[in-house]
Length: 186
Image 1: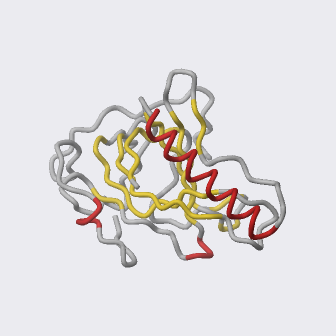
Image 2: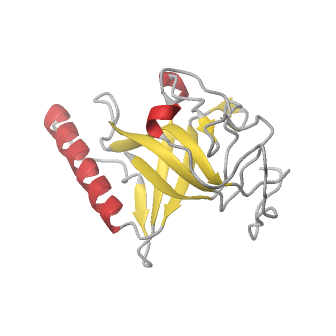
C-alpha cells in the first residue's frame, strides 16, 4: 500500500534513533493526504479487520484509536509508526532519482512524499487491539528543508519509480517552513 501526501507536524530524523525524554522511542510520522476518500475507505476496512481479528483472538473489546484522522475538508492525516523493538527503523528514504537522501538533509512540514506502508495488526499480548501503519520506505517528491540509508530487505526500486521533483544533485529548495508556536529545541 502507498500513501502520497505532505509531511505534517514534527518531522523526526530519518537516521538517528528517535528519543523522548532521553529514552529511545518509536519512530512516528504523519502524512497529510488530500482528496483521500478512497484511502479512507481502504484504511477503515483494514482497521475494522484488525479489530475483528483481535476481538476474536482475545475476546476483549477495547481498541486503540485508528492510525488515521479524517478532516472536514476531505483530507486525511495518516499516522505511521516504526517500532525499534521490531527493527523497523531506520527506513530507506530516497529522492526522485532513487538515491538515498543525505544524512544532513532535514525535511520540514510541507515536504511532499510517497510512502510505502504495511498495515500491521496489534499483537494479542497488547492491552488493546487495532491497527498500526508501518512505513517500509519513503520517496521525497518535493523537499522543504532547514539547511538516506537503505537497511533491510526492502527494495526501493520495486516500490518507487523515478519521478519529476526533488533531486539532491540539483536542489531547488523552498524556504524553511515555520510553524506558529514551534519549539526550535524540540
